[in-house]
Length: 351
Image 1: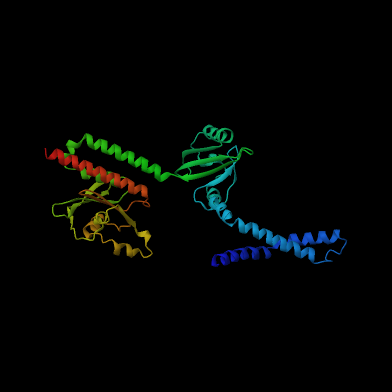
Image 2 (image 1 turned 30 degrees about the horizontal axis):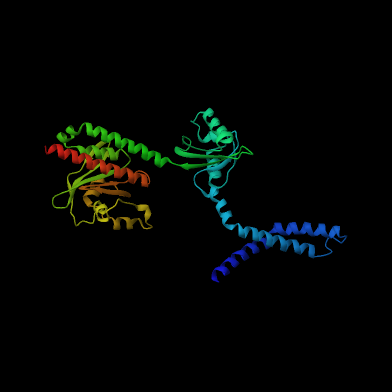
């Protein structure tokens, strides 16, 4: 019963909007004049021809809009989405766009598909559009846009009767960056495996890992091993004028509330940033970073990622831009690499 009342109230709101619509009254006015004229009456001779169209139009339009209310909401999706969605013709000229896409294109003076992907060869773009219109009817590509400094997955769907093309772009920059970073991790691991004996001799495997992490966009990293007492001991690293700076050994007791322990406490990767809190000070109250770590980094910590594998724990600080789930995957790969290298170094050292 309550649900039926809610539905009835929704329909009533649609109906009221139609009853106060000036367009309906304007149409009813012309219909009423026409009916009175052809009936041989004075144009305002009868009020019925004016009232009936208002009632009929209001009820019919309200019914249609009520029945299609969910579909109308769905149609707004291309307008609201952050990534561009638009219609272009077979020549690549943008002929329809609304909402965020329109704002973005006006701001960047985008008028054609070629303006978005300037670095692609014109012939390649024209061939893509032609194939979509005449052969495949639906195509997906991945291209880089220098204009926006982003990678996009490009989805094109052509209307066979008009050769107009619906285009929607998905920003895949983070995924592309992760693939690139993971390839760097793989290359880094390959290089470290070839000079494992040198690392045993110099005992600098963590130093090399720290530099690699810092050069990947972080301002600090704390790398620790779990010692015989169950505490975490290690060093904090930062880059200063491209030089790797290493702290003295810092021991974080097993009873400490320092975030370096969070991954072990919760048995998962832990990450957070100051922007998650209405009161920025709440971030500092929640995460009690060790004073020695803070003094060495000499920066206010705004974000971090903490992960561990076996005896090794990493916590990285202050990524230059927002942390995404791709960054977390990257840190997981780094920690796994550190575990592998550390295991091999100890194996060789104990031989």
